[in-house]
Length: 196
Image 1 (cartoon, helix red, strand yellow):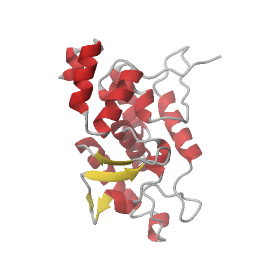
Image 2 (image 1 turned 45 degrees about the horizontal axis):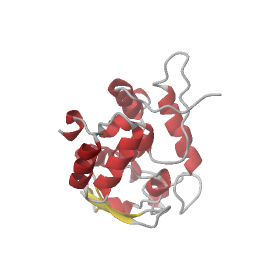
Image 3 (image 1 turned 45 degrees about the vertical axis):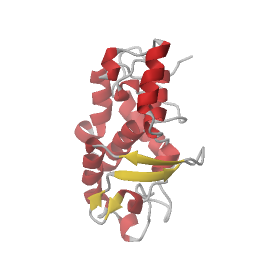
Image 4 (image 1 turned 90 degrees about the horizontal axis):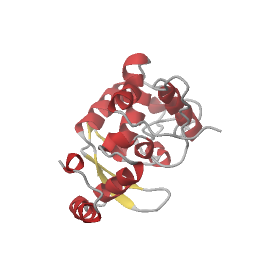
């Protein structure tokens, strides 16, 4: 029986992240992975993003407002430079797509069904292919469909354990990073490398 293991070393994380940028160039898939790793959004929330939520005319917005599908919470999320760059690259691909030209509002429109986003299964296959690229000999790299990409790749937020990473991302998204740092330091879980 195989178990799900996160990618823990930075080199493998970079290889995973850049799979659809360098090895098998695909701006859509690259944008999904970069967006997922940097925002801690669930796949369902990423797929429900619309072009209007992310782009202001021809420019990528600095923040997006997302109502999480699972929890119903409304979050304002900063799009860092890496995400904006990936989304800008993807926009050139998106505006040429047939789905966009026919008025599909989704950021990641389905190429097969009008007025729908990509399916979770399509994204699962895409992520699984990228994860296979970093698999080591004799190692199983299964990707589960629940949670966020950041849950599976804890180094994307600089932590050494996925539970600390999830706590940090949740605190970051709710705007209480300083409280999280103090609480973590008091609990003895923090390290100077994470706090820097």
